[in-house]
Length: 65
Image 1 (cartoon, rainbow, N blue to C red):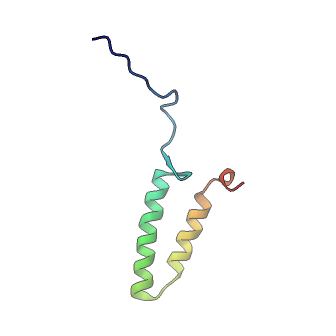
Image 2: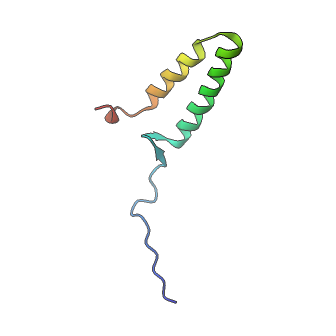
Image 3: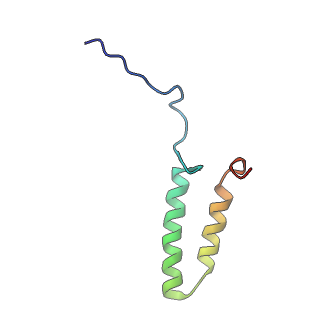
């Protein structure tokens, strides 16, 4: 039972999805949910604008080019 396991070379890289860190996606998703609730209940668009601004601020500039 001499099994060999193959691992990726860089196990210390950050988890990413669609060029964002997973932590940022969780924050953006929760803020988006709260923004939609704010629009539905209070007719306030400012939380949505802040959420979109945060999402574009956290996206890497190298992915835009």
